[in-house]
Amino acid sequence: MAVMAGQDREITLRFLAEPADVNFGGKVHGGAVMKWIDLAAYACAAGWSGKYCITAYAGGIRFVKPIHVGNIVEVGAKVIYTGRTSMHLGIDVKAGDPKHPERHLTTHCIVIMVAVDDSGQPSPVPEWIPVTESDKVMRDSAIRLMEMRKKIGAEMEAHLKP
Image 1 (cartoon, rainbow, N blue to C red):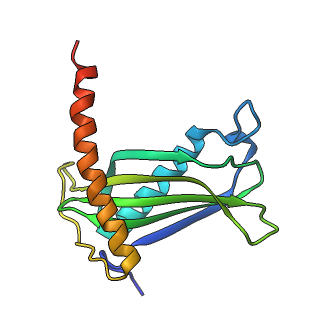
Image 2 (image 1 turned 120 degrees about the horizontal axis):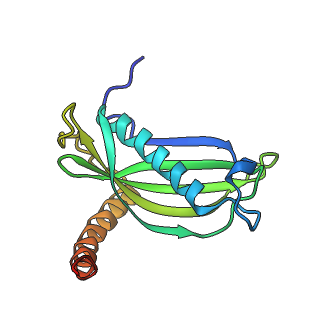
């Protein structure tokens, strides 16, 4: 059965951390983790919108614990707010020994993806309406973060002007 846009709001990518992902300290480097986050965000946003999506923002990236080579990695992405053409996604990266069931949180962030049409212009996305209390908390948090980003953006302007 085909899933239509606006129905599947979350996705989890699972794979093993490979030796090519390691930094000089022997742990998976942040750049590899950020790439995985972007892949999961794209897969989730494209699935929700039924359209090609581009990354507009990734922020609040917290590296909580290191990921080791050979760990199983789970990158979970979930729609937590929708605008007219944008989707705000909560991303959790968890990892652990593949021989054991427990996974620990290693990284968390918010990514905003924008759906675009064939000419690259922003394109409307299905609205996501929270039902559970935890979903409402996540949506409200996404809205507060949007307000904070506006203030940060205004502050960053000073760095862009010569």
